[in-house]
Every structure is written in C-alpha cells, then in structure tokens.
Length: 431
Image 1 (cartoon, rainbow, N blue to C red):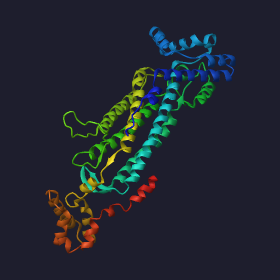
Image 2: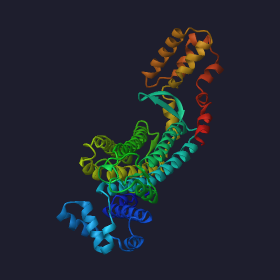
Image 3: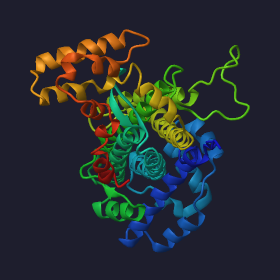
C-alpha cells in the first residue's frame, strides 16, 4: 500500500502561526531571564505569561499600517497583556527575536527530518537483508562490468544515508544557536547573562560573537546539508529509473491497481515517483546557492537575506521532508525481479566474467598482454553477436584450453567468486 504524504507536520512548523508562536516563546524566555536577574518584577513576568497571545490576522492588519512585522507583533501582544507589556522586548532588537525564533524552527524541522532519515535507514536495511545474495550485474559507464548483488548495491545506499544521519545530528547542534545581544550585538542595553538564561530555557546556546544577526554561514550549512541529502535521494531515484528501463527491468516502482501510465499507451508503467524525486532535488540544490549568497551581509546587518529565507527555508525543509517520505515508500514497496537480473547477468554467454579468465591465464604463466588479447578477442566476438556466447568461445579457444581445465573454466564463470567478501561489508553496516 502506498502511503500518502500529508503536509501538516512539517508544513505547520513553517506556518505564520507557528512562526509567531516561536517569537512569543523567545520574548517570554527573555522576560523570565530578566525577572530572575531582578531587572523586571516577577509579578509582571507572571502576568505576561498568563496573558500573552496573538492573533495572526490582527498582526497582519497592524503590519499593513506600520510596515514592520516585529512592531506589529508586539503591538498585538500588548493588546492582550496590557500594562505589563512594557517589559516585553526590553533592550532587544528585532533580530534577537527573529533569529533566535528561527533557530527553534530549524531545530524542530531537523527533528522531523532525522526521524524520517532513520525510517529510510530501516527501509534500506530490510531490503538489503532480503536481497543480500540476489546476484545481478554491476555496471560502470552504463555498461555491464562484473557481478554484484542487489543487496550490495543497497548496502552502498545504506552507508550513504548513515553518513547523512551523522551530519544531520551534528547540524542540529550547529543550528541550535540564539542571540539576545541587542542592536549590533554589543549587549549595550541587555547583558549576556540574560542571553545565557533565555537561550538555556529555549534549548539553545548563545552565539559566540553575533553582530545584529546570527551569521548566515550557519543557515547556509543547514541548506547545504539538505541539498546533499536531496542529492543522495536523487542518486537512488536515478538508479531505480535506470533499472526500470524496459530492456533492463530488474526493479520497478510499485504500480497500484487502477494506476495509469500514459493517456495514449495503455502498456506504460513509468517510474514517475523516481522522476519526481529527481526534479525536486534540483529545487533543493537551487536553494543551496541562495543560502551561500545570504552569507555576505553589509556591515553588522542588512535584510537582503530575509526575503530569501522566507521562501528558501520552508521550501527546502518541506521539499526534503516530502522527498524522504517518497523514497522511503518507494524502497519499501519496490518490486525486484531476480529472474531478469539473472538473464542480464548471463547476456552474451557470461562475458562479464572476462577478468576471471584473464587472471586465470596469467596465473598459469601467460603474459598479461597476451592473456588480455585472447580474452578481449573472444569477448568482443560474443559482444557483437546477438547469439554470442563468450563461455563457449573461451572453451573452444585452444590457447585457453592448453592452460585451463574444464573445472578451472567453470570456476571463472562462478558468480560466487565475486561475493566471497560480501559478508564483511554487511558486518560493517550491521545488517
């Protein structure tokens, strides 16, 4: 059964309401810190916490007049809080709230992505275990090379996703940074102790040395890592697309009952989900370039980054979240055709075992150049003939027969020789 993707979980983290809620979290954390240090009355802090709320529609109404989102937000909050509202945003600049709240959104988004990466790891692990010894042809340059197993291919995917898991876990620490340091970051009107206490309450660490904003290299790293994850998902999707080609057909996307592949050609079963993933990876990568452009701001700040991030960050997060959903479901329900893998492996009479024959001849004393010429000649004759049979040609070649016995030739064409160290790879991955 194909699992349908629903937006709310990740989408809600980037909704206007959730954004304003994080702003309020930051403002309240700062008020609590100020109260603990004796800068504002604790009774006022309690009143703020009890009364503070906002109405997104009202915030937009006010913003339409004042043309400043933070002032509109604070004005609306104070409509609910009343007199104690004068202690809200005390000594702060807008970016103190905006950037610290943004860190909360990034951390929450990474928590969702990390869970889906773990689900992807499990999906690949299960499929790799199932096809540990399902022999297929390995390809280089798109051309038949030597035997592998489908499980071995998936083991490579698993290793890659495990690296992404490590990167995202480190990234979560790197983006969990807040700043409550005032205009241009000098703490002129608010002391570092307030920042330390407020950030601790929010599960963040204070920026080491902020300007008026948190430096955008942090956010660029965030988007770069999502782009890298998207690139890997695209790699898996492209492989599935290639293996689903009609003349290959070693794997196939699940095709549900009632699904249609073409308005004109009823026979079509197209790899539409893999193609969709390829396209979405391009979008995520495009955001990586924009994130790098955001790093160079004027002096202690400008807002050239702001408009970019309003599109880039939610889009990158939602796209990556959807891509993970799709690739998990795709791999879980992937149709695998071992019989087609065996057919393709033995194309042209086992020509892909040419290296084993080459090495066997060398081991029997044939010069490498001569052995290569013998094997290549027979391989190319088989390759260029629809009925070509490399093994038959090798068996009939007197230059080979004088060196290799029937059992030694049999050994050359035994795919198990290519799998003798497969278990070691699996042990490294804990499969």
